[in-house]
Image (tube, rainbow, N blue to C red):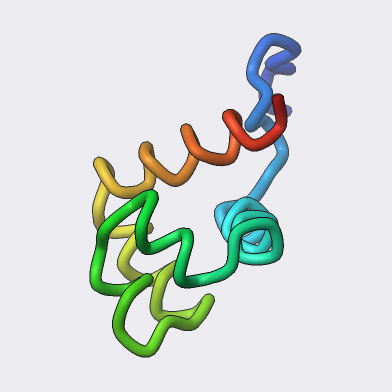
Amino acid sequence: MPESQPNNPLHGLTLATILEHLVERYGWDELAERIPINCFKNNPSIKSSLTFLRKTDWARQRVEGLYLKSLR
């Protein structure tokens, strides 16, 4: 059984859940302004963005950071 991570606010959240929250809160246009990557600018979709974010560590970190900032 995995260890509990009580101090990690992202523990238990999937990348899809995080991305859906951000799209709902900001929309694709503002999300592309805040994190300028092509998967948010050109024909954006949850599926294509997840594919890119799972392969690209720096972009995933920016998305997770924006998610944490949006919770404040």
